[in-house]
Image 1: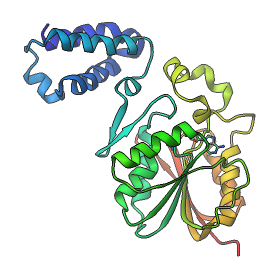
Image 2: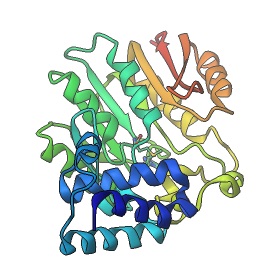
Image 3: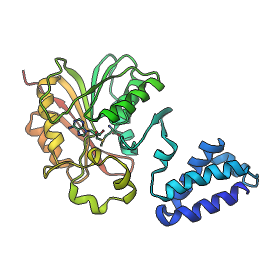
Image 4: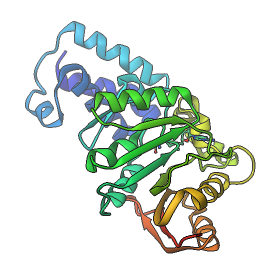
Length: 283
Ligand SMILES: C[S@@+](CC[C@H](N)C(=O)[O-])C[C@H]1O[C@@H](n2cnc3c(N)ncnc32)[C@H](O)[C@@H]1O
């Protein structure tokens, strides 16, 4: 079979579930993974015949993706900003808007600072910040033992030193250290939104990473802001990723809690998605 025929066949199988654009990107991810051929080289080698073994391997992966398993879990990792980040069903697949959040944070002068990532999941935020600011001390917390296992593996594989801890941020916790910066992309989707979320996400990604338990959409923001009262240094900064529908409520929450310089920012899709604020000081 020629490469270009494999592409047509793949798109035919997947476009019913994923649409044409996403099927094309899934094809190229698999091609790169299985045959080491990137998009540019695909066009150079489109007429090239591929071995039966490779076609079989390709089809094996395609049949998993047809069962609505995300390509990132099938391949087992994502590449972000030069980091290989392993993912499985115990962690949320890193989203582009979270990378936008990291790029915003990275604009700060953070050399030597002590940073905490709450709800680290795959470790995405902690890893990207440590890669940029190697002399920062980074702490990363999650209440999922499995997620922490993946995050630790990601830190090791990328040779980045991060202090991981199993912490439930909804319970009282006194770490006995103060942070210069606290960042979190917490669960922020209300359960009533389940109907509007794709099956691929609902069936595979950890629901506890996505949805807030109970009726208070702001549960995690409240807990983290409350925690920051004792653990964020004066003039320390807090960064959140937010739901576009509740970001203004998070903003109000920060203002009520005496945070200053509250700033919202759009992600690369043009959606108001992230917020930063400075701790005025509670001493
Ligand atoms: C939206 S995911 C973010 C994952 C990762 N930081 C990212 O941006 O890709 C939320 C994370 O919060 C964790 N989490 C949920 N409830 C928690 C709790 N009570 N305490 C600490 N972490 C929690 C989940 O396990 C999940 O990894």
